[in-house]
Image (cartoon, rainbow, N blue to C red; front, side, top):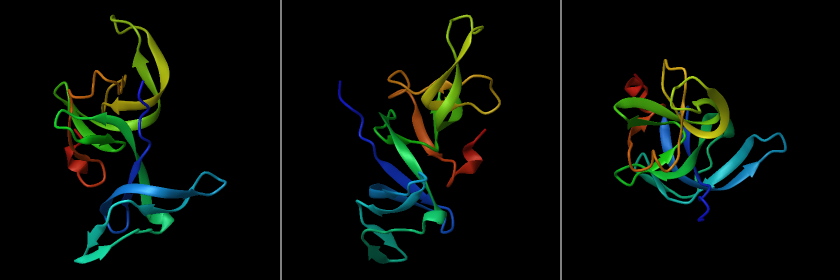
Length: 147
């Protein structure tokens, strides 16, 4: 079985900008991010910048799920996807899942999942979701897409 690449992108909460794939994440002992560098060059206000290291307080790290949508686009935490005619958010952490076909039994799980706003259960992201959903935006740049 092939292991998933563990990569991140980040959103700058001050400048309201999504940055590309990150390398060299420097962690503090507390688990907070101290700084990072980017693998790709960014063009910001017409200036090419390599290895951008934004202030740690200003950005949110978003992890790649290891999966792609039906158009081949990588799926990250914070993405908004359309799956089975519903828009939902990609999240990571503990979540509630239905464990039988009747919908009566629930269990907790940990990992990437689709969060359906206003619904009781979530959907784990797995190979059944990959290729059957479409990324339409993310919660930071397109909050209006959350329904």
